[in-house]
Structure formats: structure tokens, C-alpha cells
Image (cartoon, rainbow, N blue to C red):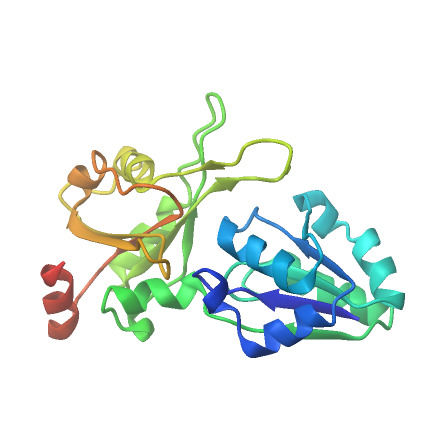
Amino acid sequence: MLTIIGLGLGGPNSITMDGVIALSLSEHIFYETYTSPIHHETLEWIEMKSQRKPIHLSRNQVEEPQELIELSKETNVSLLVVGDALSATTHVSLILECKKNKIEYQIIHNSSVLTAVAGVLGLQHYNFGPVATLVLPEGNYKPLSPVDKIKNNMESNYHSLVLLDIKADNPENEAIYMSASQAAEQMIEAGIPKDTKVAAAARVGREDQKLWYGKLKYLANKNLGKEPHSIVVPSKLHFTEKEFLESL
């Protein structure tokens, strides 16, 4: 059996009881960090409780999951995912592989940044348009097209949740995370007015969570501390949303 366990957004306390039970029955425990960094205390707690050291998988090992699939045919295998278990398309593809190979599977859901960021900023979920993901530049290549989603949302009076790129495909290399200040610079370069009011959220769900609200040009020079960071570009605000953001 393959169990995909959503770890939530905090430390070990964010793991659900269903997740704890699944881990206790697991003979192999794997995790990935290319969708989001994992809390180090979570890994330590899991190793202590399960007496098994979680194995770090690369993106390629998850997207081409021969090892996971073969092990799941005969043993109980768990894959740890920060946030919710199925917030990344890659993990949906694992379920399709299980179906093709007639392998039993289960999903253990948890909180996700996709919903938590809006909540902690006091924003109403049904006022959001499509999610945008900004990408780290590589050499002279600076992909700015994702900003078009933000512009389209602004024109349609929808808020935009902006996720920021992570380069963590290979566990042997140090992960690189886009910061909110880098994202703000990219948005300005792509034509978002620098006086646009935006909100930023760092380390949502963790003990050192940080929230910020102000003009885009000021975010470009703001240090929110350790990643992960997310940005929201609000559009037309309900009066309660406006009051909450201004309280930040």
C-alpha cells in the first residue's frame, strides 16, 4: 500500500492522528521537499516515533516512481508531503500509477498554503482568481508571463495568490527559494504598478509566521526572514478584508 501523508504547515503537531497511525504501520518512509521545505523537527519526530529514518527523494524519483510503486506492491510505504497530500499535480500522478498497477493506496489530507494564506490575511476565499506561480530567473531567462495571471485577476476584481518558486529537485544540492522581495522586483519589472498594495506571508502555520501589508515597492526591499514566502495581490476589498489587512 502507498499512503501519501499531508504534514500540514507546522511542525510535528500538525500531523493528524490518521497520519500518525499510518506512519506507525509504514515499513518505508519517504519525503520530498521540492514542493515546500519540510520542518526539521518533523523529520526528527517521525524518525524517533517510527524507528525508521525517512529517505529524501528527488523530484525525478517522485515523478518517475518505479521504486515507490514496486515497494508498495508488497509493503506499506508512506510519502510525506508538506501541506496537503494532493496539492501538487505530481502526487495525483502517483495515484494514477497505483490505479494502473492495482496497488492499494490512501490519502491523508491536511492544511495547505493554498487555503491558509488567504485565511491568515483575513481574505475571503471566493474572491480569489487563478493562482499564479512566479519562477526564479535562470541566466538571461526571466519568465514574466505568470504575472499576466495577476494582471487578469486585477482587471476582473479578483485577489491573486502568488506562489514563489523553489529549486529543490535534487536532495544533494542546496535548495534555492524565491523570496517575497525578489518576487516584488519581478512583478514591478513585469508591469505591476509599484504603488500597488500587496500582502505577504512568510512561514505560514509555523511558530515564527510573519505577515506584512504595504506597497509593492516597499516589499521589494523588505526582509521577511526564512522562506517559504507567499504574496497576495488584493483587488476589490470587502470592508472586513480591508480592516484586517490594515491592522497588519
